[in-house]
Amino acid sequence: MQHLALFDLDRTLVDLDAAFLQWAHEFAEHRRLGPEGTDWLASLDREMHPHREAFFDKVRQHFALHETVDELWASYRKRMPHLVRCYPGVPAALAELRAAGWRVGIVTNGMADNQLGKLQRTGLADAVDGYAVSGVEGIRKPESQLFHIAAERCGASLAEGGWMVGDNLIADVQGAQAAGLRAIWIDRGKWPGHEHRADHVVTDVIPGIAYLRSTQ
Image 1 (tube, one colour):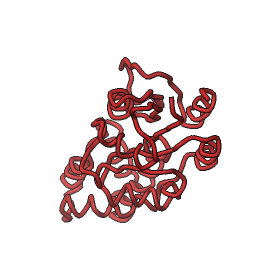
Image 2 (cartoon, one colour):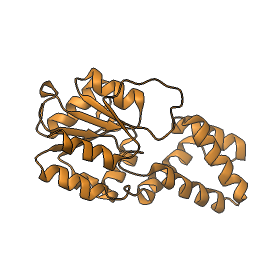
Image 3 (cartoon, helix red, strand yellow):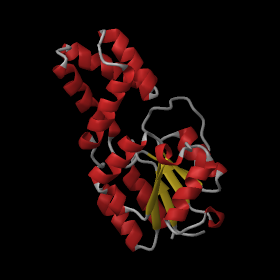
Image 4 (spheres, helix red, strand yellow):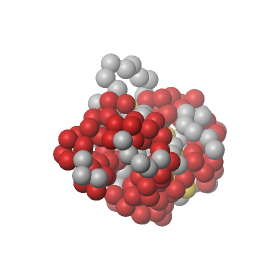
């Protein structure tokens, strides 16, 4: 098997949850919604993990906001790349993986402006060999073609195998395995009671990268 490692972005390489809470605090403070406003936003995100268009439709209705859903969503996407941070140790671990001879890529779902902004602001765009963003390509995980695009941009082919690391059992694990990759699932406790067929399970990306190194 070739040394190809593809990674999800949100909640895998970058701490989206911490960034979201910071955004929610700013959003509530700017509109004088109080601490209960921040709590409501966080609760809605935890309970639904909805598509952001649906999320902002509920936010607009709940707080009787004058902005349109599109305006609220666009503002969120503009701000989020400034708030996300890589999980501790991620840039160094990716650099070490590449130095060990691995081709490293990112496969992420999301709007082009938001995800490309995150990749650029965190430095991850330059820390990997290639990446594929659903909002750019018009294809979303778990569709196999997005994995193929990322692999090709890393100078690799899925026909020779490889690994995918991510936190979503459907988009990342099932999607990758259907594309011919092995999958490492990052279990962050958001899929209680769900069975899985991941090839390996970790609770953080750093042990996942260490496991990849051990397979050499």
